[in-house]
Length: 185
Image (cartoon, rainbow, N blue to C red; front, side, top):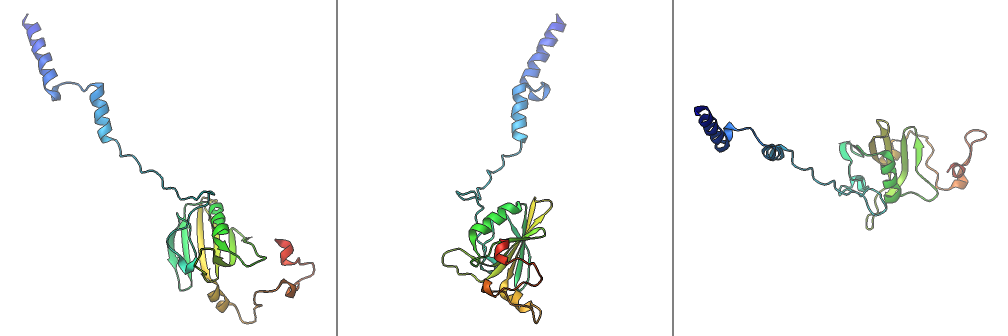
């Protein structure tokens, strides 16, 4: 009988004193919820209605930069950005937000796409001519972006270098069989 009484007293003590009893399933789920990480904030929408990235507030050399790229370094007439954005998205961004001279288009040189003598399309921002180079990095998972002031490029051109052509009629082939630039577009 004393054994039954001592077991009953032990059961009552276990039920009353939280440190003496085993945690129940509801106690474990409540404790797990309190230790769980807070929920991640919702991803900020950085695309417009057409699915093209939106520009940042920053306008280096008067040129818009897509959201998601961060400034790495800069010089007197150039600035470099980088970020984990696919290069195709950045090319689509600049196709929408830059104006190129008539008869020209962005072109690929190695692993980069170049927009030559480009100007921003933003209203009220005539912008100055820049060269924008979108460089594919790490197997198209990152983008390097270089924005260069076109005037500084012209100043750095070697003496005797041919100036850029304003009129396609002035173009002459530099070797036999070279195609007219408009035929290559």
